[in-house]
Amino acid sequence: MAPREVDDRQAQTFPFTPPFNMTNQPSLSLPLAQSSDGLPIGMMFTGRWADEATLYRLAGQLEQAKPWIQAQAAALELEQTVPLPGSADILSALPF
Image 1 (cartoon, one colour):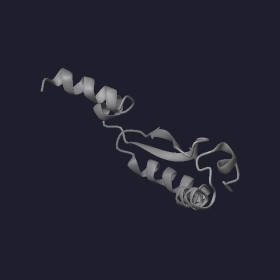
Image 2: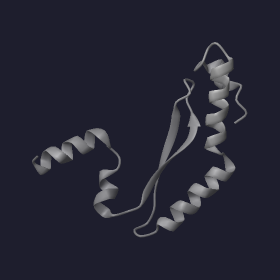
Image 3: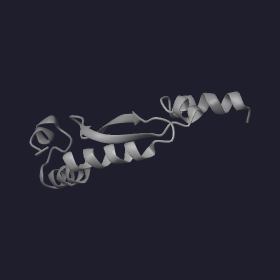
């Protein structure tokens, strides 16, 4: 496969990561909210070159402030008990 084709495919699949891959800047994406359909909404953070530690600290602080696993578990519990999974009414009742 030609290098240009690899670049094109990567840009279609991961449109926001190539600049940081080329500069070796650490980046991470975290789920911080949910859409009205229950899909995760993420935010991408990028750090200074060779400063992964700052991103890990940020991720830890955000996880403590808004634990994603609890949000997932609450959404799954509601889906099992409420007949309209994914509706905005169900998700607005979640405690986060």
